[in-house]
Picture 1 (cartoon, rainbow, N blue to C red):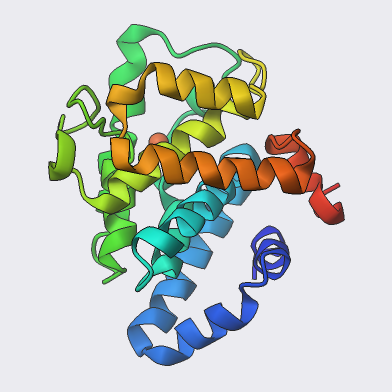
Picture 2: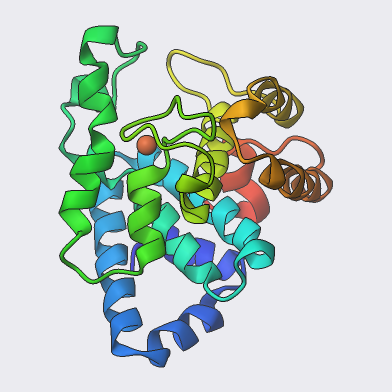
Length: 231
Ligand SMILES: [Fe+2]
């Protein structure tokens, strides 16, 4: 198994749950193997995108524990591959040091469709498929690619949008600094129309849990160095 994923599943005490998940049906066993392979390929192509995906998986899983408790591990798996469509990007777009110019935005935005097409024949959990396809939709209808609005966006897509935005804001990139968790939450509240209002409060509680656990400095760097993993 991918070492990063293996370490993280152990770190979050999810190992036994994933063993049970795999044993529960042939479909789940195959889904886990396919998604693990895709995540490993993404990690080889661009470790930063894989790290980001692991964080999205973590937040989506923890939100789903209370909001969709019948399938929280499907949210974890969906988070791992939500950006798999980026695997075919040129280095210029995937690893560029500047914000993508407007004329190239369509290439970037198309990753939700590329990703969906890549995985659609594997009989993966619907939640994972939805997270790939809808994680850039906005509650107010201004997202992409379909411009879905409100509850027309599946719960998985609405959860993925929150997890993805927060993970991106609290990550350092060549063209942006990492936001402190309070700044990230504040920024998200300023554009709250883009998110399902019923999810903002539970997500904020989840972040506050991290603040307690990580001493108020939870961001991408501290996330991966917590308890020594990836340090
Ligand atoms: Fe994305």
